[in-house]
Amino acid sequence: MDIKEIQNLIKFVAKSGASEVKLEMEDIKITIKTGPSKTETTIVQASPMVGMPQMQVPVAVPATAEAPAASATPAANEDDDSKYITVKSPIIGTFYRKPSPDKPNFAEVGQSISVGDTVCVIEAMKLFNEIESEVAGTIVKVLVDDSSPVEFDQPLFLVDPS
Image 1 (cartoon, one colour):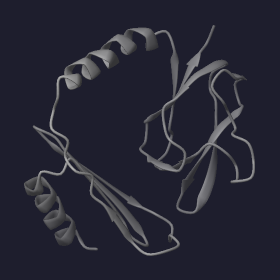
Image 2 (image 1 turned 120 degrees about the vertical axis):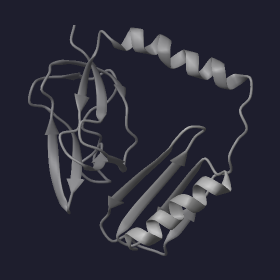
Image 3 (image 1 turned 60 degrees about the vertical axis):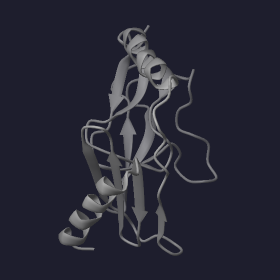
């Protein structure tokens, strides 16, 4: 897929009214999110995937009375989260919570970790990079879903240092 095809896809999604489109092909993943004021596009080179290319197009959901209440909740959570230390991604890649599908997660919510403990793995260009904690404490929250693409400096975990 070349840049012109990607630009045409972005224009099409913006005009269609869909709120989010995910396109996964053999060697690339594209996510386009649209909102009232902006369009956000994420393009990730992926390792070859098994199976046929898939396209998921969620239907745009009209705003309801619940939307303002939902947006007020994160503001309250920001105050609660300020006492926690954030473990961030040092690289771009795919986030994995465990070393292999048959192994347990590196870190669970409520688990105590020390400096240097491996908390996850990020795959970049078919290399698996162990991400070690730079802080000691207790994991309060996992902020990324397993097997999700992550960006540089994206928050991965919240750690309570006390």
